[in-house]
Image (cartoon, rainbow, N blue to C red; front, top):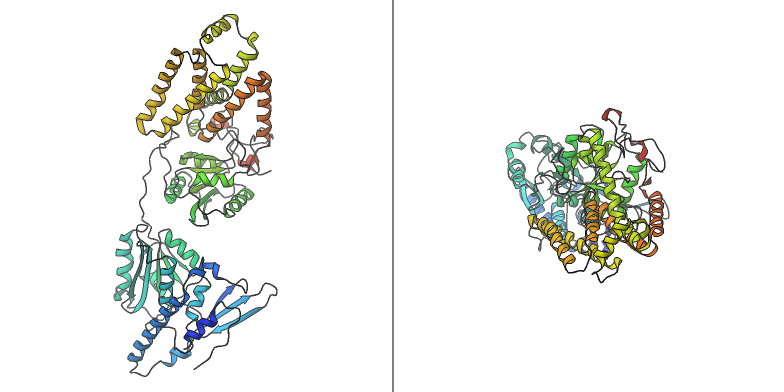
Length: 616
């Protein structure tokens, strides 16, 4: 019996060799002519001479003895079968002479030298079948691959992991692996299994690569890929692809078969417009990409898929226009996404918190939208759009203050109408942020600025109120916030009714009970309406929080406090950056860019240039 040299630097191989060294194990022989295109010498590289078990994820938990036993029993069975086919003469000469050599090369950290251990695949060398798996690659042994997948997917507990074993052309052992519920079973039952099992499709098959033959002549699916890396294979299986393992082949065919349930395209829920598109994003990544490509029909539109999340591996798509987006910006976005080390990323809402420059800044540092037309406009300006699987909202970076109060309807209106609505929107933002603070500072510290008749009316209305002005204002603000939050959480028409009727009834009851003055109800109502005109939800939240700071400053220092608050606000906004782009661009710093920022011009005079979005 041929004895193999003692391997150096191989994990636990000595124990495995002692188990199988007296057993004749050989690489199974595929039916005549079946070849998966493997070279006579296969090489597996590892970056160091230490434990490489983490490459395929938690390999310390894999029971390698169980995989080896499965390989051994399968190959002994094939050995006996072939011995019977040869009239009891045992192995053919080709079975022992033409065995491929498995070379395990290990690169040492200290020196650029390589130590090699050769496994010839001859009898007595059963560990060669699983050595590829231990290095994160597909093994040529189908039994080893099946046993490894059963352990990796916990097949004894997971009822939706399907490993369908069958014979290609009724001769070659093979196995389909997929997740039930993530695939379209019609594709498997009509376009994969019948074609592979039908021997008539392999009449013209000879010594060619079996996977090449299947791709070109058997399976009529438009998207098929070949992989050897187990990490990528498992990720694609969990994404809904079907993996085809074949006996004797050290690579896998991944067939496109995704078919999980998805929501159809509907109108946006939070960004309603009167004049414009009525399509909104869904939770399906491919549907969202198609909605953008339907608007931007340009070959330079790039969509790169990146997994995010250490455990759930959420698919995210980076969409940008080559030649328009700043290459440094694209590189920085990729760096931030790939550097995220967090087990579970649920969607775009969690992702944007990892991408922002300053997590303690009140203003949003990315802009989110559920409208494909608005996302397309961001891309055309040079921004990078990030789409997450399972989220109907996409995020765009970088962002400026002007992106946060623009709407997609602005471009659909004539420039006079669009500019008027935009100025009303800006006035509403300022009112929602500072009106309560200005009112309380005016009444408490600067009564000389109020007309005498109005001052007397205010004093008369506040006569039955037992609380100080600041307590009265905070009480009504908190009540209004409760009504608004309750209206959002209650579904359907009931929530809208609660928001309108509840505010009216509560305000009337508070005035009748003498808890607040009528004029304060007017101030709070105007403030709330001003907050409603803010088109961006995260910006409206920032304004709602910032309003309480201005109330505090106005109640303590009057107009001086309001002035201090405005100064601090502008300093923070000037120092704030989104992916290296100043928040007040193109006004601070002054740069040449898109003229459609605050004051609109006729459409033919508007300059659309993404140069102002370059990192600084």
